[in-house]
Image (cartoon, rainbow, N blue to C red):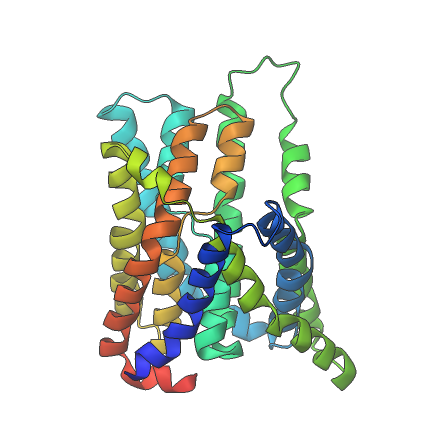
Length: 317
């Protein structure tokens, strides 16, 4: 009952967004506006605030990077090789399919979920998980660019791609927070209150937008490959991360955060990159939609499992 009380408000907001998507009370582009507000204002604010107020050494949680980032990278390599050798997919197609099963929407889902349940203590691991996903997306972009079938004259130089990724407000705020944390200056009370006020709006805005954009119809279009990738993303990946976190000895809160970060839906950036490079955009779109819808159930399952394993950690909320 305690866990239900913790997570019910989170998924109630998602459900509210989904219900409103069936009405004509809000404009069709409402979710896009909410996502832009979250991406350009709320998430950068909480990224910079949570990282900037921490001591630099607190960001160097190598066990978390190994358990979360290392596990997802290893899973990507296994899937990529499998798609190449077993299914005979081209490099670009295999890359998109494999990344869709490991790259999480940490910014718009894991961060508000962990922040809503655990507060700032749970959000910091999600911030670091977002940094890991950003590095994975950087790798994805580099591979797609190098394997693109576009003519050399139309290819975007890799340094330009990297620069554009670094200009992403979420990534830029994360890196700025790391640099500011290194200075050890901290925040004045007025600045801290301002950033904290912005961060409080993140959960409601992001979760409502997720619910508003969730599409049940795409679930009916799932084929065997999409079903396999969806189950890998929502069941296999978080399970492997949970085992890895236990093996490296992460404390309960960071173990929960790593597992939840792996269990959230596929990052929408996968679809954007797949469409830009014309590499399985429909596959990427269906996986994003399928994982977004099914994660509501599987994430609750993982939270129950984690609550059974680490009941005391949930008292932090």
